[in-house]
Length: 137
Image (cartoon, rainbow, N blue to C red; front, top):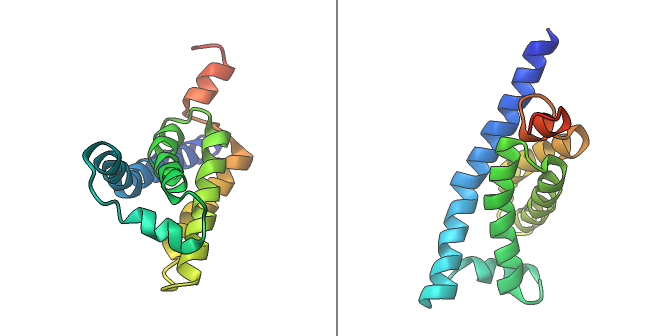
């Protein structure tokens, strides 16, 4: 039974990391690249600014990196606790933003809870962290 639990937790980590990276982070990264290198408007900066963050370009970029790079790291289980911490922080801000605007916080809430699990659990099971711990990498 423990083996199935390990597989289930690894699948949760992988799937949530890939979905966060692809469905949320990728669009933000594309927007950031277009803004910083192509001079295009990146509307996400206005969202960050509306929350009240100083230097909204920097915090928008940090959120994009957290979702994209953090999602990749979470999916493969590398620096799992660290990436989960940054994802949890980003999702906490997203929850706040949704609670103060449109009340559509459930997805950010789920990502927050998943990240919280991996802050405490780490990269157990099928992960790069586990391979490093075992001396296989």
